[in-house]
Length: 299
Image (tube, rainbow, N blue to C red; front, side):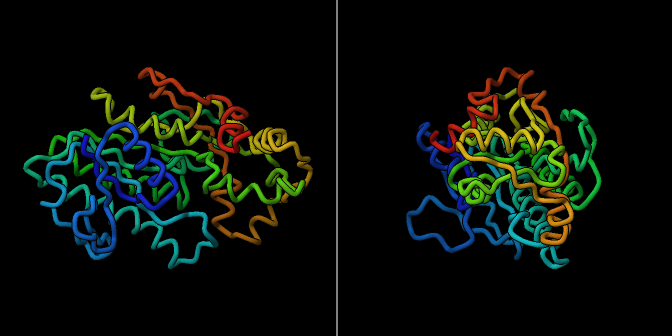
């Protein structure tokens, strides 16, 4: 397939581009700088509303991953506006550009996140569960809604609600590793909040599965079948690293250090399950946390 991908400089996008190219697909990168002559790239400016529809004519598929990081620091009001607009404006521009094509792609996979469900304690959440409350839930709801324009052109839409991605090259796991490797790791808050995670290898396979399975459409939880509490995650990570993990970071310290971001990213409990992926026959390579961490860390 000829596949257009946004967000290719990010953790998931860079891995996905290489993965799909190894599978024999042609990847066209959607970039914010003017492409060099002959490069497999298409220019866009999501903030300025610039994307030439003719440049994406004839794509077989689109994978849309672009969006500003939510965990790079405290959320000021300006930063929250950027987080929201980077997802909604870019998604709407891309979806509307696709909708007017004479030869639209057969499928668009658009990223979302399990933040859609908000803080739900120990409730098991399938794709049929409604949205939660709070800033991240509202961002995800608007983000997903912005992608629906592609359906006007008959393009199949798959929304991937991605959990915590376990990879050694970036993301949440990389930020956790320094204190754990020093023997200073531990749980956050009370440790009872659920973490829904997925191995990078499995995430890439879910995207390929969506691209190549015509019957799939709608929202899918891109998480492993074994959500764990933060306390259990801490225990398993310490075991894999062969380090102690007795340091607990109180919830108050998280709130003081990170504010609303810490509350919604580090202390929120989301116990999502991949019900629709499993029902469609997807098989996880790393369904349990220990094997996923060992894969990510080369252990």
